[in-house]
Length: 306
Ligand SMILES: [Zn+2]
Image (cartoon, rainbow, N blue to C red):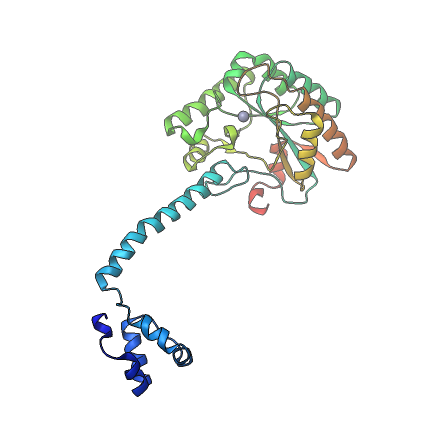
């Protein structure tokens, strides 16, 4: 029998139950009601007589548990941070524009990864036909290859933003590399179309706090989205439309693609068809298509109200 349980506990308990309870509490963590102790006396006395851990043992247990708890906390934090670094509407790493307040009747169509031949030009035809202005986030190296398409987009009255020079995942880029990506794209746009918007969209939506800080330092404003057409792999137009329609909540910034970061010449015919159908449908329902700049003019920090 452990030393601190020496003696006949049952006899002690029977002789003086209240003292026994006090003793039991002294050797263990029990601060139980008398009734419980009375009902399960034998069992409890046996349990109480287990040697309580010494101070050193308790410390050793805690020191073993601590790294595990720390590990769990760190894992949870890493998962949450990873999610926030890619989540279109996440705001942990700094404010980004994701749309107007819920319920507004505005829609901003946005197209990434152009300019692209021939689908950017086909898209321009559709947008012109319906008198809709959109926002294009262009890749600098494509702008250098097809400045004529970038100029056609600008001349049609659309807003053009920065989508980096080579479309890297900026989470893994150094401060210097990130800055170079943004400045190179800006200079490609400057050469092709001159003055353009200060809007910037990180490739894949990937960012970390430094990404947004660098963008702001050089005068760029991060723009994300709250609705995506999932058109990367060119699904049928009806699929793109259905996905968009399911996410619409009013005041939406819709992510679509007129190009692909993998190569020039990507087939975006289905996105062009989906665009026309979405414009028809939402115009009929009284929605207004605007550029991101126009949407921001109404609600400059809307991400806080979504
Ligand atoms: Zn992109």
